[in-house]
Length: 87
Image (cartoon, rainbow, N blue to C red):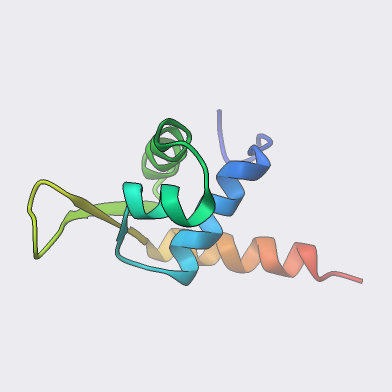
């Protein structure tokens, strides 16, 4: 599945949440979006493989991974916003 494929809406919500709240863990994203940890994990894995997000160890607990957009992810979000606001 490439970036040209349809992305499920809940996964888009996860990506927008990461954009608005960089450095949150998958559990924090799950709680904030009210999606299951499984859904968030699958979305993050997909976006990581596509190069849109990165996972970095937490400064407080190295077992936890903090999720952030990559430069490619930021460009992707900007493209999505542009497409959504197109008149």
